[in-house]
Image 1 (spheres, rainbow, N blue to C red):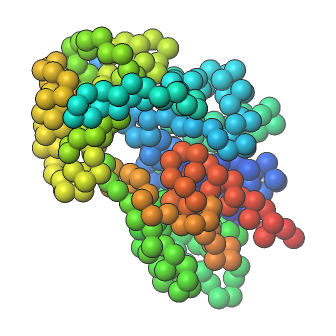
Image 2: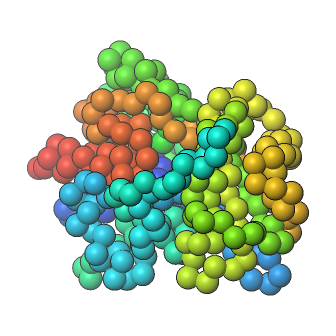
Image 3: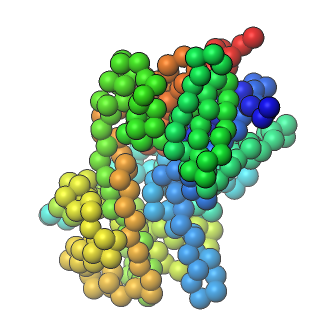
Length: 342
């Protein structure tokens, strides 16, 4: 008989990895599955090769905050190990009548080696006694099964293989979780998943031949097409080459969601040239990425959602963004640690 871990986690986003780390520290056996090659979900870092060297670019989540006590406690160690650094304490806003100066505020943190590094911290562990969480990549889960006569859950992979666990954590956008688990859900859990809403986002990565001096590192934009611009190279230890990341507005992204990446990229560049100048379009390389579930706009009111030993977590629980995802994972782990006690 195949050995089953205590907890099977589908989705190596930040919530799933944060949950997995706390579960492992509590002595529970964890196994993580993810359909992609990497970890961290929408805290994503694209690796590009340019002139024989690797360029890291954050095309998903741009930064994170640390208002929650549990995350704030981690910051000094993350800074000490060079994993995290403070980027800025606020962003100016570009409106039709010009740029409103930057407001002071709380720190915004970034990872010099890319935002996906944050997920790797939870995957590998930061404390001396931590062991890496078992991770299986390129493992697309296509179905779930729960036997009336056996405890736990089984998941079926695209290649026909089966994985099982006493408990199952689904760390993925609510619509995907609903599609995967629908036939096993109680009505109230199904309704809760159906209530979650998202805004999409088209993101563009541009490596121009040069970027003129700009007195901001990140810029919020009030514009029909664009919502955000970042000088991504300012996050890196070696800020070369110059990299511009653009995020389209939620409304424009929704209206143009099914464009090809090339079509979306062209329209985003055109809008950015109108705002910043022709240099935006003079690129060594450029690409666009579609985030279909970029930002939860209507979230579940609690940090996680549970149906016995089936648990849902992610940034759509409690509050969006990186901090919300981590809080969701920690809360899900706390629930399972208690419920799986012998």
